[in-house]
Length: 257
Ligand SMILES: Cc1cc2nc3c(=O)[nH]c(=O)nc-3n(C[C@H](O)[C@H](O)[C@H](O)COP(=O)(O)OP(=O)(O)OC[C@H]3O[C@@H](n4cnc5c(N)ncnc54)[C@H](O)[C@@H]3O)c2cc1C
Image 1: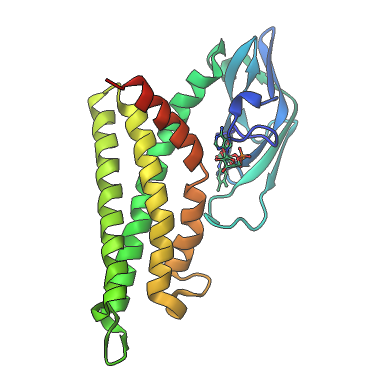
Image 2 (image 1 turned 30 degrees about the vertical axis):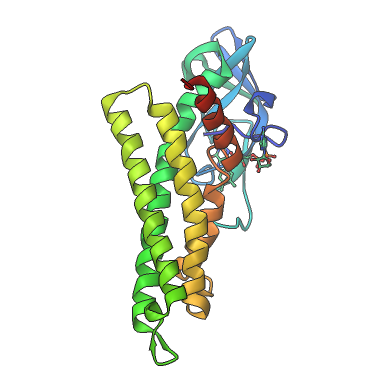
């Protein structure tokens, strides 16, 4: 799913990719960055400016004019095949358009991002479960100063924080998913809330788990080391922490009684 561009990150309305309807074709010109999965994908869903609004097209990566370049050495999520993708006069059949051209971009991206946000939020729960389990097992079995680490109060405090983080993230995600299942209009805000809460807890929780593991987790490929790298990215993707805060603040004002 390609929204982001070099000059359009948090502000997707600044995107310059153009989708032009021309007879029974659409023509796509632009450059997307950090498209998750694009290195492996056969099809990309690409957003662009169109007829005074926005449009979305499905683009085969094999189409003439599409150039996919994998992002080298990402900090985390290394199996996710992030790629930058260039589109040079890519001509596609009109049936490649999803929906109606000229729709408001904020409407399109809110809908699309809600799907991404709920999956990122639950992914953060997975990160926290792995961190809590690994840290707790390690703290219960590693002895220093004559007793297991979990019997040192400062380490026990870390384990309690991890448990709280996992529970809070799980409950906020479960609430958001219940809103989806019920088709509730609250689902957009509940999903932003779940993403924001879970990503923050995952980033702090992974750092806490690293502290409990110490050298035992400090090598590439260890589950907690991987969680530590991946979790930081969860605070950036699908609406950064700050963008989630802006949305939640707007909701706080709009619903004030
Ligand atoms: C691992 C990974 C996967 C990604 N996958 C995809 C993908 O599949 N498809 C896609 O289209 N994009 C993807 N992206 C791009 C991602 O959506 C952007 O990185 C994200 O939107 C932030 O944009 P930016 O990096 O340009 O940061 P910027 O927008 O430059 O922001 C920099 C900092 O300023 C803050 N900031 C910006 N505006 C405001 C504001 N108004 N108020 C307060 N703070 C603000 C941000 O929160 C951030 O902390 C991915 C990125 C990463 C790292």
